[in-house]
Amino acid sequence: MNDSANTRTPLAYALARALLFRLDGERAHTAGLHAMDVLARLHLGRLLAQPVKPLPTRAFGIDFPNPVGLAAGMDKNGAHLDALATLGFGFIEVGTVTPRPQPGNPRPRLFRLPGQQALINRMGFNNDGVESLLRNLDRARFRGILGINIGKNKDTPNDRAIDDYRLGLRRTHDRAHYIAVNISSPNTQGLRDLQERETLDGLVGTLRETQESLGSQAGTRKPLLLKIAPDLDESAMDGIAEVLRRHGIDGLICTNTTISRSGVEAAPSSREAGGLSGAPVRSRAIAVLRGMRARLPALPIIGVGGILEGADAAARIADGASLVQVYTGLIYRGPSLVGECVNAIRESQHAPRAD
Image 1 (cartoon, helix red, strand yellow):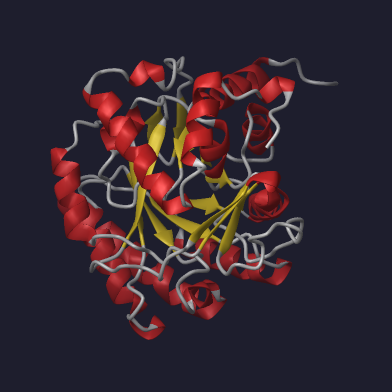
Image 2 (cartoon, rainbow, N blue to C red):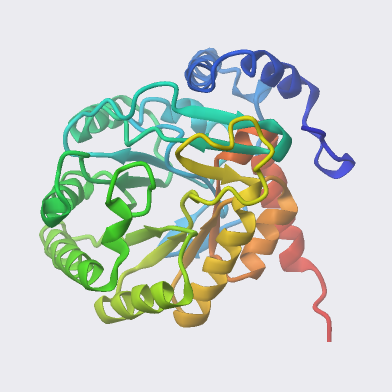
């Protein structure tokens, strides 16, 4: 990867990245999180990132300190929240978490494509289960905006998927600021079939009923978001929009990883199975964001996929996102990406409009 003059990676992170990239992708992921934990405990978080100036943003009825969040997948079990909070995110989404623990797919299952600023993963919802997540949240000092991303266990058939999602919603409702329903990972066989109109209608309808019941009991309503794939055609987007309009869901996350390999065919790892993230998914994520924004003009949307510099974040807001999330960009650019994105969004909001 060559850093351009406008998106240069700080030297400290460039050196750390060079060391981490000597490791297998998953081992580097674990090592990096543990290193951040140590720095956070020593109150040395500023070695990773400078403080981010607030940019208050309201979406889904929640007041966010800034509109740049961490996407699900980085901290599946909510075990590193205090360290991640030092990076300046306006919100952090943990998970995907399933009702029962599961190991995920066999290793290796995470692959870098440095020349394309991309990752391929086939993790398969590896996590310690929702009860472990809740225990980790009890131990964390983090009090920022928290999203919890829920999924179904691999061995739960699709005709029983609603049971897993309802359990996940019930168990996380009191702990999350919002709950994201993941039906778009390509790494759990058949999961994306839940995006089909008739199936989605039953799933969303039941979850909305559960959401309202939980909100009445708790005296506070937690927003429910749906995370969708970038590999949707116009008909699929029509169907999803119709369902969400009917049931009045609170928001969308556009998008998950792609099964396409367009633009990365020459990379050594391009034939690995799994979801592709990073720069190559950018155009697909934008197309789905624009498509869903056109269909659901008032619905708040989180834009994610291919955000590797501040200009990407600002452009995603201009395309109709209320908030953005990063993940792969954080791997390649480091923690400075968060402040860069916030500043770019701030500058775009104050830029003079063309007549």
